[in-house]
Length: 195
Image (tube, rainbow, N blue to C red; front, side, top):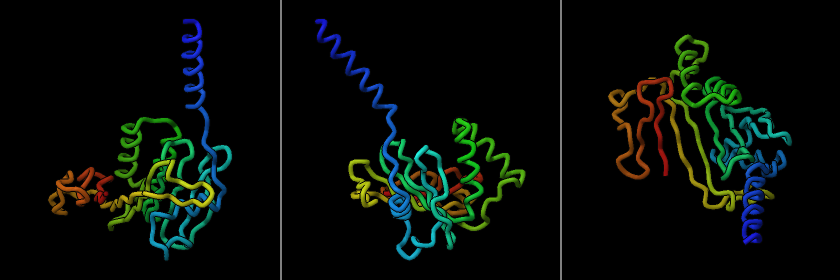
């Protein structure tokens, strides 16, 4: 009985310790290669890329020359998830990152950004602006090459203040892969197109 209790205690301890272990941060060139996977090949070389340094801080890995910004995979989170979006969305996205760093809830963060958009502090694009997302499982990722097998794409088209009436889109999908409008009527309104 004592051995069973000791074994269970050790298992609990190692499970607790494993939750606090950070994953390896890939080299910058691998982070860049992975971060640009969501976008068309011809756009990859010119995209600005954020990634993570050895301390886990989000930093600029490469300044861009085109109209896209990419965010590398967070090594502290399970799975692989990278995104690229129009530079016109950068003020909105950057403010979201600033507020997330303050450990605010999603609801608090969105209330602040809504007020800042309404006041003009954050400028939202007037025309539709694209975001590309590519995601998958950690076990399908090769950290030595930056390749992700079995990944899935999701596309998001930000259309601030669009409504179901103005777009003709539903506010939830009715079939797999169909476009739909999320957060209609708000500064965050966006068309979702997923797998």
